[in-house]
Image (cartoon, rainbow, N blue to C red; front, side):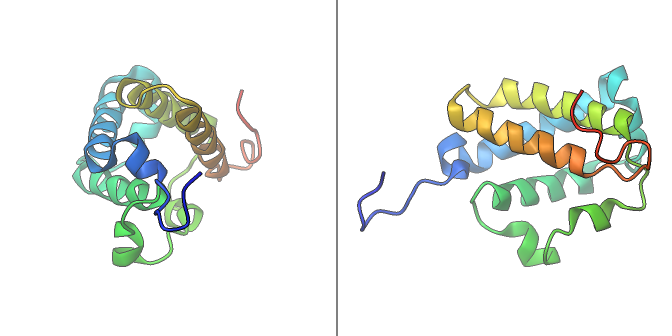
Length: 140
């Protein structure tokens, strides 16, 4: 609990701020480029991941309570509508989450906060499904 005159610590600050987010996202996309289990997720991305990497850094920074980099540039994330042009089903979600989990565990020390955030990432990943057979499938 914080005293009335103290600013609460955000997850962004508690987990390592910009350095952590950049390391996490760099590792995430490196895994997506190399893990065979992530091939379906990788296939719905452009050949160069540079722009996707920067956008994910910006999004996660704000989502975790840091500066609102993504919304300042692009407005409300509208994640599902921004991704609707890509077919996102079970294979894409599972590959994406596999990479995210591995990168997360390599870059974020274990804690109740880290676990709670990863649970929210899982829910967000499954929320992105836009293929009829996979919508609402939930984690396996």
